[in-house]
Amino acid sequence: MDKNVASHTTHDAEADQRNQDIKIYVNGDILHRSDAKVSVYDSGFMLGDGMWEGMRLYNGVWAFFDDHMDRLFNSCKAVSIDIGMDKQGILDALTQTAAANGMSSDVHCRLMVTRGVKDKPFQHPELSRSGPTIVIIMEHSKPVASLHKAGIRLATVPQIRGLPMTQDAKYNSHSKLNCIIGCLQAEQAGADEALMLDPNGFVNTTNACNFFIVRRGAVWTSTGDYCMNGVTRQKVIDLCRSNDIPVFEKNYSLYEAYGADEAFLTGTFGAQTPVAEIDGKKIGGHDGAGPITQRLQGLYKALINDHVDEMNSIKS
Image (cartoon, rainbow, N blue to C red; front, side):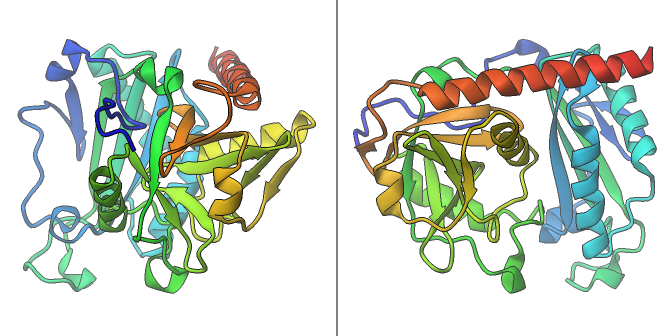
């Protein structure tokens, strides 16, 4: 890999000075970012014991809010975290935070829920007796143009996505060390991000996003057994099925990935981000997004617009 090429990540955003003065929701209070704090005894800080969602605001609408809430509430239920409010309560908190910041579009949100403040600095969940802790961070956020113009460089790393009985990747948990190690390994290999395999050696996901390839006009992605059940991932699969684009959730190896005509990543922030190379091997014969990726980008933008129009018509 050419280590002289400037690196970027799937979460690189355009600089926006307004983010230095954002207001953050912390357990019902809305505070300037310099005053927004949680306890050092918080279970999220101390142990990574919590769940989070990343969402985007388009023209006053949190895109696919119900899908994100289904995942959040399912994850919290599975690990016995009581959020302490229903979906409408969370939507009200999001609305309140957006209004305090004067935000309506091109906004990215990180909603975090932890088990709360612990009585003692130890592991047992019963020590978290004043939870939950709920934090909402919103930033003015647009992906940098280079993400789609140049694409992401991936390196296959030793760190894998593990079995569900170790730490199920479907938990969007605060415990991200597995992914961070993968990201470090990719960086040390001169790449932007990591391509992670599953326990059987099949291509799975990156350290931050879901991964797709295109071969002979068909879209492939992993079985989903070892990756985050991404909202954008599922929307892309659904768009393929409703627009006569062959799509397969299947096991495949680096052999198929290296020989792909296109590859792209999906995530709430970057939507569909093209992959330029894997392990130093250029993907496809194009720069930036290939034709199928471009078509899916257009279909996804149209889906967002239709969703926003529908939700705004309901509100009015």
